Length: 330
Image (cartoon, rainbow, N blue to C red; front, side):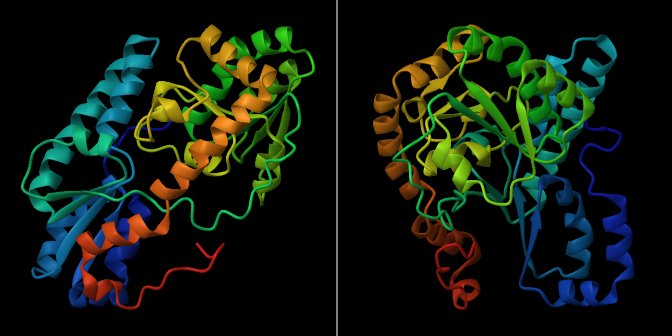
């Protein structure tokens, strides 16, 4: 599980390198805008203000850490980790309050995350990532019957925990009802706990896959059983814009469309399994629905809305040299 000795600080190697690199320090002094990616880097705002008092400072939150740590505390099964995660959540919330006072602008990736932020003087902007850009033409004309797909970086604790829950509590129900069903798991970071659970369940671990499009073309359904963490789950959006039916949890779906976008959104193992089984048993209906959702997802996560949102945050000066990328370039 993720360590929490310093839950809202960037890696110390980054800090040491920043202080030693004169070229980077000079670039900071000349910058009109400084964008801090990830909430952890917001602690640098006072330092950056001293280096460049006139710069506009933007902090982009990919996750809201206080929510991520609070969920970890609630899910902990023993007293010590529950207290440690609660402590981390409290520190993150205090840091978020400071950042909302110190930054000029805060960027989040969904309206859900905007609603989680404490009040402050910084402008809060929602930028929906252009995840549909670069997605090639997906041929969904002939998905493989019974093929279930999981995609996720398994070195991230939330993904590993969700997959282990799925393998133990959900997948046996699916296999009992549809013995021919097959689960493929794509993603780096596979640890021994997942390897052992996958071997017992008869699940195929693909590891790193350089091109997911063939998997999306074949899959009957994508499952995202994540129950912890925070932020927008890009793997959910990727599957939606590929036109694949998606069954996920409330955590996996949050900040993405609405309930109608999903073939199922359930936190209960039996209900989750039943949603997957409905897709496997009624592929034509599920395919028609996911094709309709795909059109909406392509619009919501397309380039035009992203371009407009970026303009409101960074202004026309910074967008003068930005051109719409060619297909597959992002």
